[in-house]
Length: 110
Image (cartoon, rainbow, N blue to C red):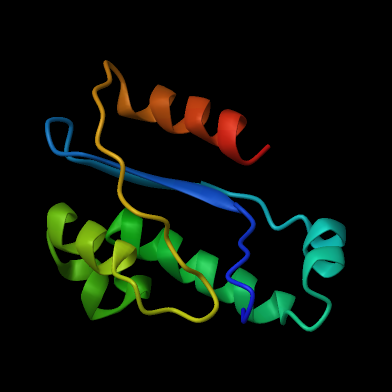
């Protein structure tokens, strides 16, 4: 986007201790269409689904999904995509990575 405006559609969380790499997202089509009418929602959804497969380490995620969790997380959060752009990585502590992913999703996306 030429204005450098972004809309949160999901959250990615990596926890080394739990060997957890998870993603949760929502494609809110009316909100995204109002924000950026020319956005290709099918491409966005396909990209987010691919990121899900990479997080899961699924063979459907291709060769990147076969890397270890830290490498997959670095690949996902690298600044390069024109469709899906991750914000800067924010470190933190948690007791349960899955619960923290849900909490962050509710706070930042839902």
